Image 1 (tube, helix red, strand yellow):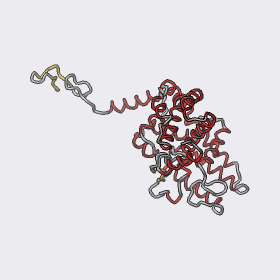
Image 2: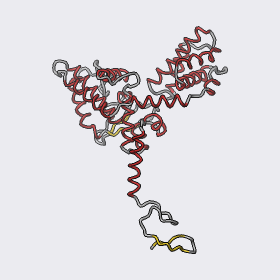
Image 3: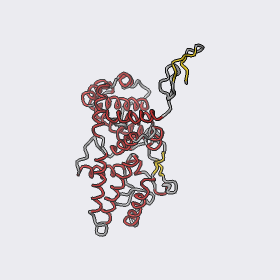
Image 4: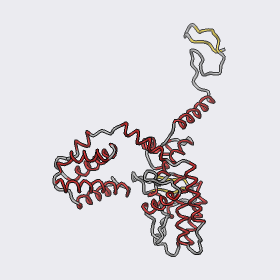
Length: 344
């Protein structure tokens, strides 16, 4: 059965209906991979071109990207046809270059926004809305204020921008000080405590109501576009990236998702338990450790010293033979029955 645009749409719908794909970004990524393969075989005229396509991929992309691409193509053909999967063996046998992977991680670590850059970005967003007259340009004022609010919430709680865009006002629990993110990558809702930003949230909602109240088309949407509709994650990214770009904090590797990476790393440096981080960021502990934590050698040393100070303050293990680690006074006398030194 030949691959077509219709097959691709059906495959993506199947993935969505079965909660295998939950994010719009993942959907776009899958579609881009499949459309690129469709274009390639339309010229090659045969699915037997898979090994040749692997060579093309390896020349253009990193081994991690190639591995991900092969997985998507294998997954498509597993669904698409009962015939032999042209990417089955290729996906199984392809190995990621670990050295290359390590270098990529180092490059990602260098791109992570630090505290000073976060402060600079928030300050720039605040200056932007303060420079706009709320009387003469009310909608523009709201949009600028909204952008400041997005940066504030993302840098403080590390939520994905798609998750924040999906929040409904009527689902925010002000009494218990938390909101629930329903648009999560794994499809599982998770709570975000918002005690530290309650005043900012209430002030934002007051601005939203006073300016956008009459033109709002989706009254439950926390974030609105200039037409009063729910703000899309794509629209939110463009707005924040544009702000960041004006102060040279944006490039293709430093998108709004860096705010999430910043917060995860900050939580960890502040000694938040990984299980708690996992619960309020909606991501598993292994993914947190592999993807979101960006620690330097100095961070590791500081964490060790903090741990060592706490350990020294404890009454820890005392060796029964030599007395190491205890505060007791030990004699040189040995109990002949057990062969251990005696505490005075």
